[in-house]
Image 1 (cartoon, rainbow, N blue to C red):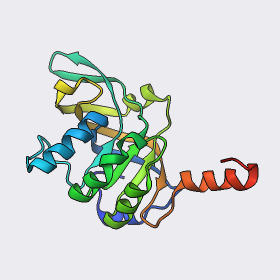
Image 2 (cartoon, one colour):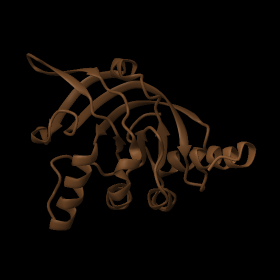
Image 3 (cartoon, rainbow, N blue to C red):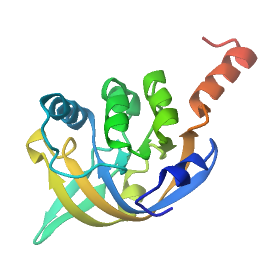
Image 4 (cartoon, one colour):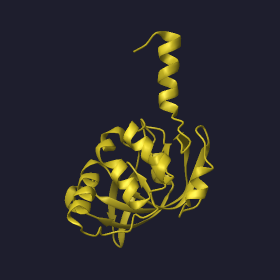
Length: 188
């Protein structure tokens, strides 16, 4: 798939689909999500346009080079930490794809269904593999939050594989696995 993604593109995806992404994505972790929602409350504009974009829950390791930055490692971070903020950001900016690991909660899942956003899981522990798909660091904002927490604007090519784990049809791979474990193995 190529960014920008349309709502129509996203609504065709189903849990279990495997996607490779090319185009522009933006990283955001805990501190960035908190600041984005603060800016929303205060009616302030963000330094970048995230309308209809892809947000990657990632705290990349970057190396400064003479005319910019180079990604060294860019693996996913655990998305549930952003649950407090993600549904608001998805609703306000019509985010089309969240990439991370571990899934999201019910508030975010409901908003994904409403707005037309999916969750794509990237394999944890594959930070160097992820960095190899980053063709260019287009920019960085909020570096005052620290390297892993800043908003990194990345141009990627064949970024993935991403497994669609939450779709717009109410399907959630994480919930499905949990329910199966409860039934088959009498787990929690």
